[in-house]
Length: 102
Image (cartoon, rainbow, N blue to C red; front, side, top):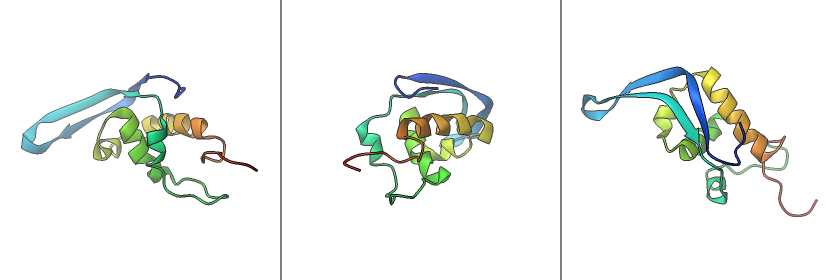
């Protein structure tokens, strides 16, 4: 799944949640939107050799899917893993953006 344009992703394990007021929502598919510079603000600060913790990606995934973090937290690992990999591929092998000089 590339992060260069909107990408639909059908969940292997749809989630059903009860929201405030007893409203039931079902999430069967999400659309991962194109990542923009504004999403970089959601990344935790990292040193040169640091790698992003998987949980640190949840706010980024929430922003890219227009879902709340508490909904993303309910995704099955088989569903969240390919989404995380897509974002990681965009950020580079070490999962951090490369800027400036060497």
